[in-house]
Each structure stands twice: as structure tokens, then as C-alpha cells.
Image (cartoon, rainbow, N blue to C red; front, top):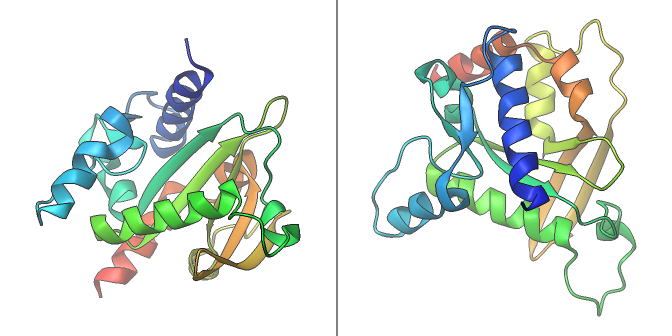
Length: 192
């Protein structure tokens, strides 16, 4: 069995436990074909709710999260780090992390979802999450990370012609510092 699919199931389960505040592990699940159906349909101007990216919905209670964020899940890539964006030579091709940011940002645009997140785990390392730094600013305004130390990094770089400013941290840090209610407040704020 591919380690990527096991990782995707694990992350969906962890997202479910976190979003449901410990009640269930089955709010989210892997999308079919990593959101390929939704991507193809969006090219025809058709919407496919809750099926963009790598995380889909199995319980309607998770809909607010997927209206706010589209997820890309990456496992392995042990020779690739987010720092490859910083230290690559100009003549070298765009690093994988830059490609991931471009792909998920394009997916979020196609899905009309305001934010995105890349959750990645290299071999024998902790899972990390990267998302637009604008979301981090808003999360702090609604009370996230108020009581939890937030070891994180901010990376600003050009990737494939687009400038990204992203915040990254261990996934566990995100789960500890952000509560589902914080994200619901962010979503409500977007509607006003």
C-alpha cells in the first residue's frame, strides 16, 4: 500500500478528531483522485462542493472548514524541504514546495475557497502545515494562538511567477493553537 494514501487517511482522521473536538474520526476523508473530478468540472464552469484538493467531506458538520480551506496532503519527499525555495539557483527548476503552493492556490481559486493549506510529512519527521500568512493574521485577531507558544516560520518567495507569503508550523502546533471556533469566526467574518 502506498504510504501517501495511508498518510492521507491519517490526516483526514486527525482533522476529524480536531474539528469534532474529540467526538469522531469520520468528518473528513480522502477525495477521489485528489480532487480531480472537481478540477475537471470547474474547467466547465461547474461546481463540485467539498471535493477539491485532497480532503473531502463525509459529514456535513465539516462543511465550514472546507468552505474556508482547501487542503493538499504530501507524504515522503524526504530530499525536499520548504527551504529549497530559498536556496535554489536561478537556473534550477522550481522546487516541489513551490509547485505545491502554486497548485493548491490554483485549486483554491477554481473552488472559490479563500484559503489553502499544504500538510506535508517527510520520512521520520513531524507533519507540518503551511498556509497563507494572511490567514495567520486573521486567526490571531479572532483569538487563535493566544495561550499557546507558536513556533512558526514565515516564508516569502516567488514561485512560478507568483509571490507567496506563507506561515509554516508543525501540524500539532496548529491543532493546539487553533480551535474550530476560530475558523468559524474567520468564515463568518468573510461573509460580512
